Length: 442
Image 1 (tube, rainbow, N blue to C red):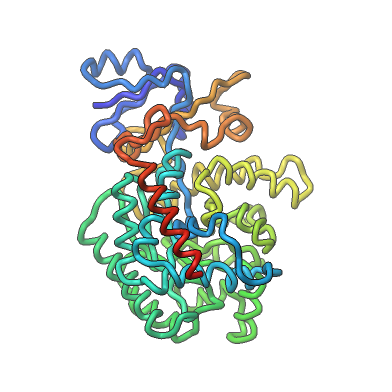
Image 2: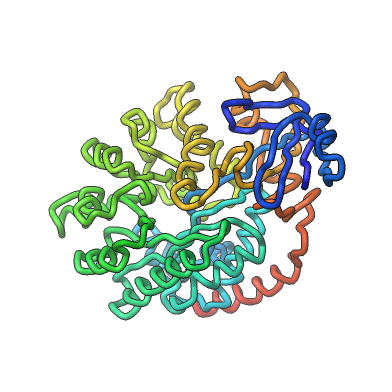
């Protein structure tokens, strides 16, 4: 038994959302009880106590769309002229970088942001991977990294036509091999989805082949959807329909499917997303950085579309994504009250809802029976804090780098800002060496 106590507990449990002198009791990988520190210490006198010292105790963060492999691009200079649009960003950066990744690169480029996740209190990720030069075993390699570091993950490989039929077939096989592996070796830490890149790089024949392969697997798809205008134009010119309409025609939409971005969708497409119960994932920083526009997520949510929050690999810090989403939609709508409700719903309600489709126990909340994913944040409220203003304190007062302790599945992976059982310096040194070599091949 492990107690995490003497802190201010944000539970995300409507039954008791906030405790001023709270404590979380952890038995193995699940939360056994939430109460006051005094009562739980009396009930479990032999339990180990992690003393939060008045800091904030809250559920670990969930990132609903991540690209671990993108880390090796940090600081890298492009060899071409600077991109002038989103398609050029893909062609001159990402589609060149992913081609030169080796399996060792895949492993270390995953280890770096996973360590960053731990440091920023992100305990669960949905990752979307590409490495055309090293497709086979790539998801198993990433899973090895997530299991070694203790970060909960749901992984997929992005199938695409851009590297030819053989690589496309390998992508389908890697997805299915990994999905079947996670079903046979069922555990609480690693799951699989079927990854697709985007409509613009997938022919009808390839989509049909993917759907045939994934039929009956019980998992959904993870696909970039109408991220840039080029995706929409391509679908209209080649297939006579918009992107979401095309995905719907192939039966790709549904409650287990993640449609990422949805920047350029119209009202009819929003209705399809709502009716199919598809999960949209908003990535505000990435959309701003790639200059593709602001996704109409406020309108989507008003129409009943299910929208979660991710980072697209832009950061591992969900506190940061939370802040940027809030101000982005205030800015675009030119209204200071915009996004107060919608963005917290994305992060604190809908991201756990996405997890429910893949993981057996609840995530994103501190209540009996939920997975023991708990973080301690070094934040001392300078003003009164209550269940009514928690989100305001998180928005304006907390950040990922203020995370003091990270517990995932009952395992303490960071305590007092020190990683547990992880040789960070060795990992970073090897990663820098590999990244430098990869830059030469780029």
